Image (cartoon, rainbow, N blue to C red; front, side, top):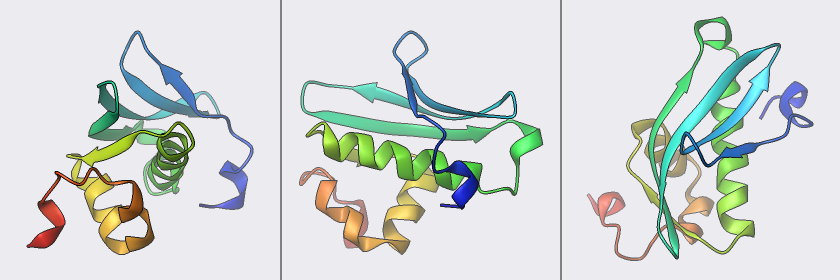
Length: 104
């Protein structure tokens, strides 16, 4: 994560079912579905003003930390999150054991 994103808080917007960060008035977010012991990450998006600036990576990293710190298991259906976990296999430690996508 780029240093300029370190202090930006992650917001869990339960009404919209998304994890969000706001950078200079623009949002980067991940749509999620929550179950009692797992969080499925469905779609990551950044507003056009943030494209190519590392905001998607920042919201992904902050969301993974949230999932781990709150003892959830991750189901990474979002292609960006899936690719991130594949590039950073240390995060497989929080992936739900029933998720089989990384075996191929």
